[in-house]
Image (cartoon, rainbow, N blue to C red; front, side, top):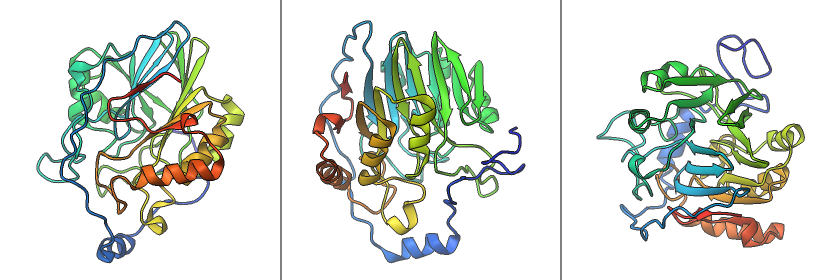
Length: 315
């Protein structure tokens, strides 16, 4: 377990830049307000195109849905927060159900060097999906401190737990765990016993960034200052309403655009939208709001792209 630090008190992890904790009263106030916009029960997208061929110095990201992304850097292929299950839940019969099928299943993926898991919430750490990946030969998973026992039980041969700012060498590349503004829990009894975070990936002279779940905060500028700007980022734009409840743990599109600028990202792709109905905004609201945020910041659409489910991008 971690030593005492600016984000660990000896028993639980915490956010250095302000708490994201909400009480049961807060949850009831949100749910009883009844402000959730309806979503369709199912969205059918066009079939996913084949993965593009990459040049020796190119990188790409493929949006598989929610925070599940396939990253390809020179010599390094990474899968982040994979969830191919129907529900983001500990149960198969209740909990948020996906309105879009996963763009690829485990069987449709190329060979993956490592899985990166940002934190232990069920929409990001899905054990059925992780077990299927381990069974298909993915041997390595990297996650923040406190998540090792759960991931070892999923069948991975190599489970690497990192604290913020710790790097690990994988397949000739480097993966570094970065801070995030969030929280963790898989039951009523383990809140913040495991750490959360994002990942900076470097390989073959190219770099990428995946933040996991996070509210906006000073950590984005700190990441750029400590680890340098990135070629390609994926930033969450959904699960943000109501703001009084969600702002401390989930960015909205305006926050995401500011994070893009703080990171010094050459290009960013939108993620964490249009798959699971978790909060109050409508299914298309994050896309419209991102367009407004880009316009307000003077960003061209190609600087911060909205990818269709299953779409790949080589910036």
